[in-house]
Amino acid sequence: MKGFLFFIILINQSPEERADLYIKLADYKNAVMEYSDLIFKKPEDKKLREKLLFSANKYIEKNSLKIDKKILEKALFKYNNGELDSALYLSKILYDKFYFDPEIINFYQKCLWTVDTLRKLYSLLINTERRKDYQSAHKLALEIKNIYPSYPEIEEKINYYFSKIPKVEEKKPLTVERREVVKKPVERPVEAEKAIKVEEDVQAKVQELYKRGVSLYSEGKLEEAREIFREILKIDPQNTKVRRNLAVIEERLRGRR
Image (cartoon, rainbow, N blue to C red; front, side, top):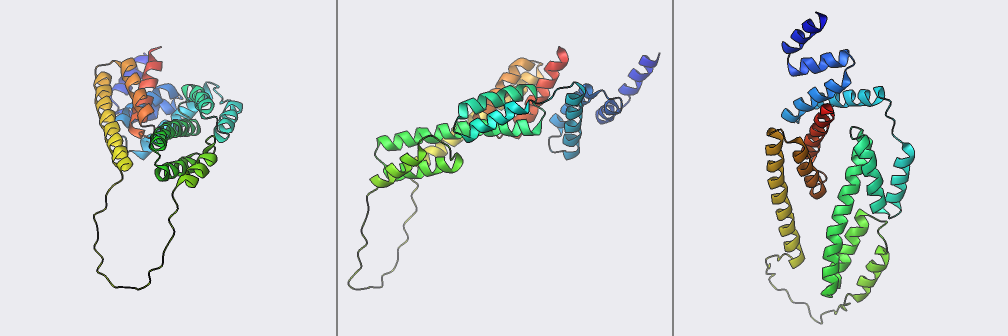
């Protein structure tokens, strides 16, 4: 009888009231699922995100899931010493198990973004080096160092490209004449145009994949939708909307088991 009354109470409440009730009952798994659904509909609601984080942390604590700090420390060590692939691998292991932990999420997304960005920049660097455009190569190498100072042999490349840039000696004019300055239209470098085109293509692909992922989710095809959203994060690791949607799907799939 009590179970029946409890069921009636849940039906007559709003989704947020049900989620709050689950917290009071220490049923953090159902609370996480309810708040995940709410955030999917209201992604900008800060209070809902705080409640979801609280429920997730309680769920982890209740199930005695403790983050192996040694693995995290090892991943950070790898990241800071130029072993990006190893750092990404270790952070993925942590993320798969503790995907609700903010520290793990931030580090995993940082590794993904760094690897993807460096891959694109290095590809541009190789192309400019082949064309012997050492000035552009020098700028790209400096940008790589700025993003990831531990990138292997980046200092040597910076010095090499700088040495290849033609040095122009300044000559002082014998007479100074005042002339009207004619402003020329600023022309974008070829590499900048290519980079913009690549970025536009990436964004178009992200939009296309996102629509497909939402469509699969609405059809109840959670596994397929999850793969689509994971593919988006490989392209655009900083996409918080996709990351939230993926968290909802992951938790729903866990609820099926």
